[in-house]
Image (spheres, rainbow, N blue to C red):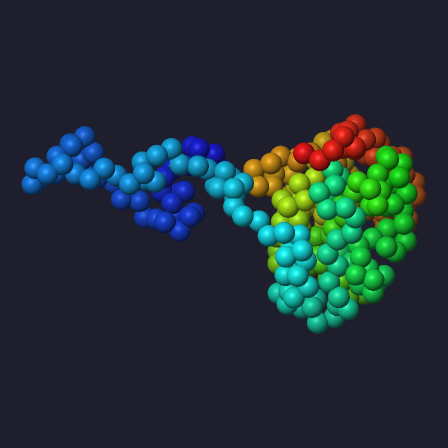
Length: 249
Ligand code: URA
């Protein structure tokens, strides 16, 4: 949102509508000749945009978010999970990787990307000088395993994705690496395929901050289609060019 929003839109969005207007704003006297009270500050001042309001809103800590996620029963996945899978790596790291959802190994261990795809992800990160031990924070769009590793459902993504946006807001990465269709489409708000979106730098706006985002194929897809390795390598070079090793934003 920008400052061009009408006062009414902003007030409604903040739950403060409707906005009352003077019938004859040019007259400084009321009918009974008494000088009218000045309009309250909030109604006449240059109002902050919603992005600016969000940017100053108090965020939970990552520990608080982790506890909220652990107790979440907002969708049916809570019935079949062993445990929630919140994150791995270094909080506030300059690079944050976002994947799709936990698989069987992740559901068992409580950590994201620890199966075969995760091991490949670790090798991809090593190739660009990154690791979850030093400068990477990792999370998924879904915090619970979809049974049988089926694709996430739209309703599950809608329920769960606010958590990953909050993780980004709190961890404040300098660059994002989005792997696979579900992470990419959710964070970019796009319906395009990975093939259409990869090969260029995107941006994700979180709490008024524009964060550069590199997108690529999911490592699990790469295990099935090793011939796509060259494209992923190109994407990793684009990531390396973002110079994320120079500290977080
Ligand atoms: N695939 C993902 O997208 N995330 C994981 O944590 C594991 C596999």
